[in-house]
Length: 477
Image 1 (spheres, rainbow, N blue to C red):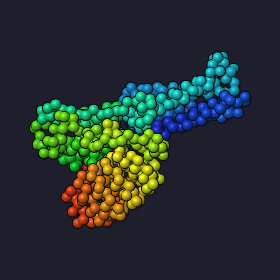
Image 2: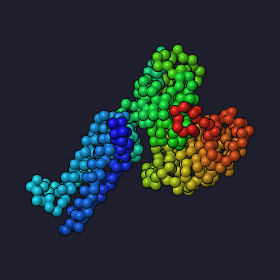
Image 3: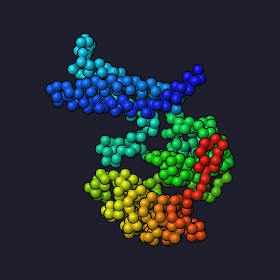
Image 4: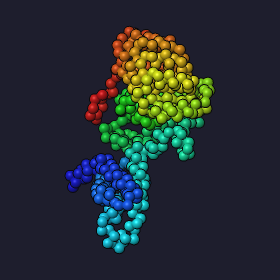
């Protein structure tokens, strides 16, 4: 009996593989059925019939494996039910279409009555596939997965409201319960889409005290009194782009202040019952807690509130950049400030960067990692006066020209991971008063003496750190 349960759980893991087979096969069949409408003869009939037979069989296996996978739990019941029954409907509908596309289907009385409507039934099947896939994506990636990535122009056209996380405001923060009033709302806002009551990635749920203490498949994630040995915190401070970093890439990142509050709570014993005024507070933590009373948290509108208002964006140029794959994302609408991200356009080069000078007063974040830029890019970047975050990781930039960043008076973050920049070149950064964080993991020479001179003003992340090894871990980082 135990073996049977284990076998069913194992077979359920094949669902993500099997579920794509009927989608591809049935869509090919639909395309041929559509083309058949414009033909006097039926040249695709045999192929359509074969695709429907294979597609219906694949749909049944996908539905069965999905049912076995759902037995493991960890999914929102309503969404799971919709996905499950729609998947069954796809299998039934595709099997029905197979009989309607058989040469002798007209011999059956019931088939003769609906034979002329078989293409429209096919269209319904395609719609069912799309809706079923939507709920499948929601189960896997959480609500809002598709809408989050929708281009701004499409959101505006279709009237899709952007999801703005509500700022956490606590009226009397010193009298508030630390866990219920501060920590749990942060976890709910940033973590529970993947680790909540409807979905538990890695078997980890964070919506209750009991589930938080229980941990996940790899054991406990919380060690009261020691944030560095608590995986709940350790995952939050991994460098950007690390596959183990939480929240994962594509999700709304947790703010620095929120990370510090979580570390403070853990280091103070991770109490679930104490009030804020019962825990020791450093000046930094006291200041962060004070912000909770006014709502002055690290939202984009707050971060860029003191920035000058930039000119309106040239719509024709923005549309052209977007078409190339260069993302232009508003971060502070009142100031017309934007984030420029070239991640989907790896051939982005120095010439492309020069074209962005048309919106140089709008760019506050510039992500050029993994692109084709060179040291010539610095002569262009220095003309962008309001840049606060600059990503140059895994590019060909080096020490040459790094000194040209001195004029960027608002630069607080610089990512040089995987470049040829050395400690000598980094010495040019000491004259940027606003700079707080520099990432140089896997860069060139990192002379410790030169770096120490800079570290007095700037936090240098060399990547020379190790996560604490917990007894339940299977991989040592």
